[in-house]
Image (cartoon, rainbow, N blue to C red):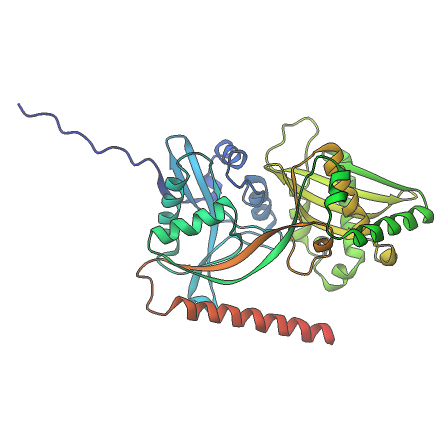
Length: 385
């Protein structure tokens, strides 16, 4: 009698394409908590807030990787027509005006490269061999650099369309150490002057809300401030459209008695004689607070109430250690470039699986760069008018 046949050893990590609606909540939340780069935008609650409000497709799918410990990686994605696809479809991480980082959620561990290799296999399957256009990718972090390296190991071509430096702030031992190390002391002096002027105009108070009715009141104040300003006039305030207003109320809500699913939320406000004159909304994940939105009373612009509030958030970071890093979640040209001393390089890349096309990747990148220049010029002309 011959020896029994031995089955092949199981593949440690396997990629799949799954509807996000079918992914188990407990597994998704656990992945968010233990991810290498646990940003909030692909956590379950923000993705579900997008879908429930109509800002994300109801049939949104994700590339997933599962292994011996369960769900090991996740990236929501869409296929859409794009100039980099030469008029055809490209794949793209799920994006909205309220998503400012697009790294996949990947569980940390010594086998990170294996998880990333499996993820890249899933990316090729998800795109059907098409090009990926990938904006808002932090490329210098462990995960961003690891993802690009995994693509290159698999024979992908990768080109950078462009990049910018996003302001971030790493918490020091205390606020005094932050002030001592700061490279723009004249800017800090100007902020102190504006804070004093605000204090002279009335009673200045600051408050933080993270749960319950206090959070609801802070959100209401934010929505009212934003709608009263230029974003309201332009129709881009959260309250300007039913879908974005519904998204905000779905995301920035936390029951005082229920355990907080990741990410946690935070609202900071500054009041002048009891009236809210600036409000900030943040998502906190993995010891980083992403300052998603800020609004202020534009009739008080000369006092810079928004920057005064941002400065207060920096003080609170050092006084209460509610996070280890502040991420400005901004595009180039943010006023926080003068307040936050560190930088994170954020890139847009094109990534092409092997054998996908004979059209050179760099030519595709040139088309994407042309699109950026055309949009910038259109924005400039509209601004002049």
